[in-house]
Length: 60
Image 1 (cartoon, rainbow, N blue to C red):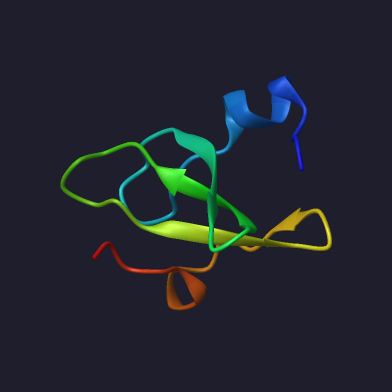
Image 2 (tube, rainbow, N blue to C red; image 1 turned 30 degrees about the vertical axis):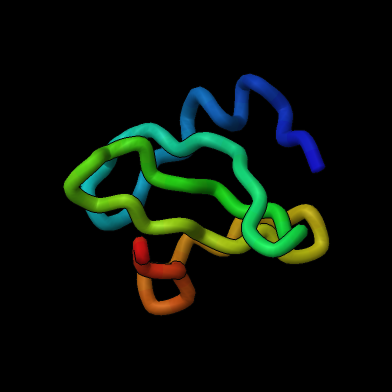
């Protein structure tokens, strides 16, 4: 799943406001926070990013 580049430019982590990058976890798409001290990963369901901190995967 690829998001439009303009969308990635405006989306930020709801927790720390750092930029997000596309990634995969166990074959599922997600948007990962690029801040080293945050690192939350938000799921993408049916092509829609779920940018809720409660739904985010915590870094290992």
